[in-house]
Amino acid sequence: MYVVCVTIFVKGESVQPFIDATLDNARNTRREPGNARFDVLQAEDDPARFMLYEAYQTKDDLARHQQTAHYLRWKQIVADWMAQPRQGIKHKSVFFGEQQG
Image (cartoon, rainbow, N blue to C red; front, side):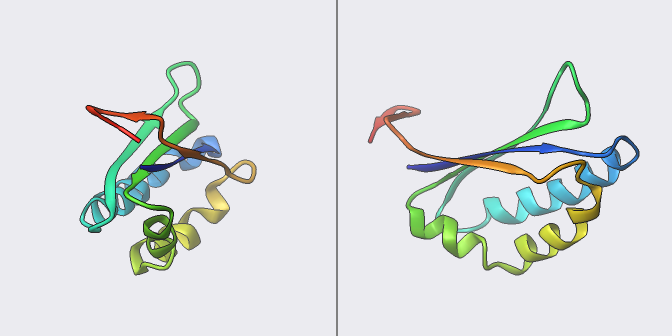
């Protein structure tokens, strides 16, 4: 698995529109053949901080995701709602669910 964890700080007044746009992106991403997970997490101590946990079968599947219409639409829509640039950290899976590697 190839995983990216994206931390996003959203402007307070934009939290709900951000959630709505991100759920649309998440639902469409889950339909992609190479996607294994797409979780949208909201920080308990700061409702304007989010983490997107995305798992793909391969690094190439992530690259294909970043070219989809729903991702490009999401990226454009949420850009002005971010309080600072998003921070994505990419990971190689050591243990994922019930499988290794």
